Length: 262
Image 1 (tube, rainbow, N blue to C red):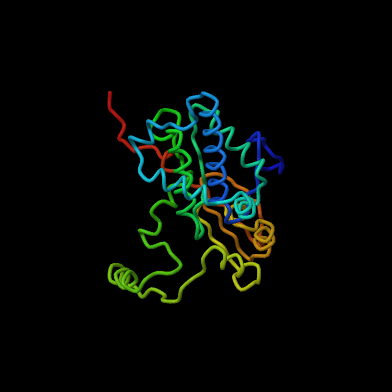
Image 2: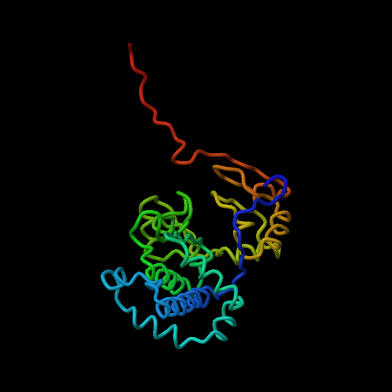
């Protein structure tokens, strides 16, 4: 992070078009089904886990029909990947005995998020990669201050019933004006209408969709306050005044037990 160097994390990298994840997954399933058919035709046992599909899934025929009706031209156009690239990904998948698919917020935090996860699950189910050791679906979600934040009222669009209860509980009058979401906040920082930033964890400048805009926006702030368990790239973007407040994560907190007397 400090040297701005890179660490090799994968043997293959595919830049999927924004919104093209579902098409990519359908392309992988299309390649898998074609390879399965060829394997059966040459005397093999097939590449699908038919026992698992029969016992643990429903709707398999409908999924196959949908994939058959989706042509490669559409898959390539929507995914932004070549057919050869998608087929190579599918081959890596079907040659593995156990597969874990990990995904981050980029797969789910947009209008096609639910559909993406559904098709990802379909891909895993086809070879029984659910419910067995060393296989499954792994959503890499946020840290402790992210989970449940909406439940406790951390939102830029608070509803009136919540605000009314908040006022009653604490004897205050909450502001009724709505705030910024992440994209609007970055635009306000970029345009100079927002002059300060307080972040509780996270690495916003890198995690947001346009880091180059974010980097310049953070450097133009009057104040940037980062409250975090670990130093990250956003902490290093200095505003006119920058403050880093370290804190302990929940796994780092020690219990305060009274000392025993011997």
